[in-house]
Amino acid sequence: MELQKLVEMQRQLDRYIEEKRGIQEDVFDRKVIALLVELGELANETRSFKFWSDKGPSDKATIVEEYVDSIHFLLSIGIEKGLDSQLTTWPVGGRTENLNSAFLQTYEHILKFQHHSDYSNYKAIWESYAEIARLLGFTTEDVVNAYHAKNEINYTRQQTGY
Image (cartoon, rainbow, N blue to C red):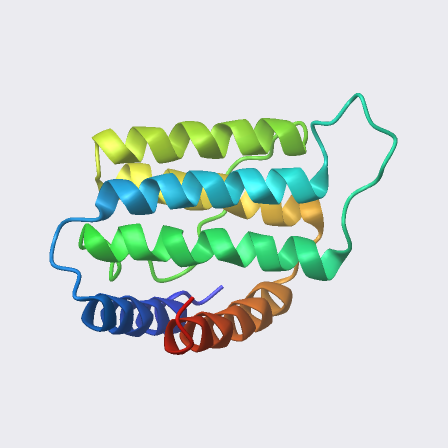
């Protein structure tokens, strides 16, 4: 997947939010927390870890929307650390056993990146996140279309006092 168009869209959204809200302090840790929370919301919608429940996952549209919520913050932390131009295509990583393993690996990579914000750790997040997409059966088109739609929603939310 070509990431540079999404990077530029995210850079513009971040700039818009920062200007509108007068943000001048470092919000990297807040973005990391937001990414972790969004990843948890995605896991919740897939219900992959809920061994105690018979209820199935949410519909695909809901799950892909949660998936791209994380992408917004994943792109944003890369931009913040100046890694946005280094990652031009979506890295493909190793295969994991199941969705729960992929979620856990992604959490681990995010926390490692928080403490060591280099390209290698950033790429590792993308690789594990790509594995989640593969396991969920998302195509590049699914992700890009959902990102565009959610990006518009995010602008609307900022304009209406979200």
